[in-house]
Length: 154
Image (tube, rainbow, N blue to C red; front, side, top):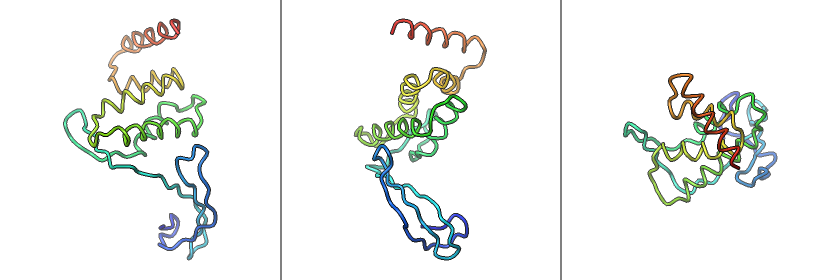
């Protein structure tokens, strides 16, 4: 593993343990050259999933992009990093075990919306505003009222 501080490609594992949800292994490493310590996470990848974008372009699924989108929607909402990680891990697991090698981005958006709806209503609305391309304040109002109506019905 390459050191993020000096780019030396030899590091020693000092400690390994599973993450809280057992979805990854957390490793503490020390660089052989500069002595800096850093943490890496090792995850199982069942299969490589290709995302089909709305305009037809294809790209490899990247967990970090999904994490970034969810974290952005949850910013300053009191949603913990662990909750975000669990949501992203669940979506990734669904994609990798779903049987499809190519998945439309729309399906991922719907999975995120479903997860955020359970996690935090404001984050759900924030994500929806980008995902559904809200262009006016009225779009927010209409969507927020459907969210409120659904919450009352539950």
